[in-house]
Image 1: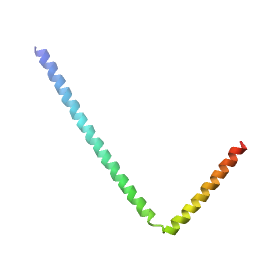
Image 2 (image 1 turned 135 degrees about the vertical axis):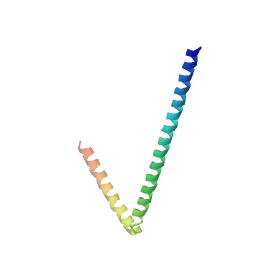
Image 3 (image 1 turned 180 degrees about the vertical axis):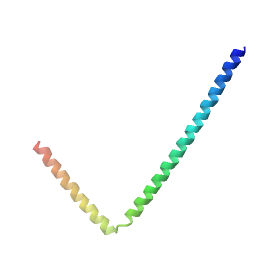
Image 4 (image 1 turned 180 degrees about the horizontal axis):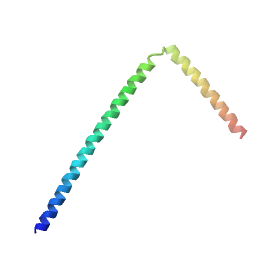
Length: 84
């Protein structure tokens, strides 16, 4: 009977330990989640601030320039593909 009681106590304390560890892990994950969300918010804010540095005309010129780069890249890619 004492052996059975001892086994039950061990199982009960093991289960409590498991629950305690699980709560600790959940707390760590919640902290990491919060940290990631804060970093994302900061990055979004930085992107908004950096985008506002350019005037609409500058943004339009940059987009046109990048579109030309993409067209050039696509045509070179096609030329290379045909060559092979």
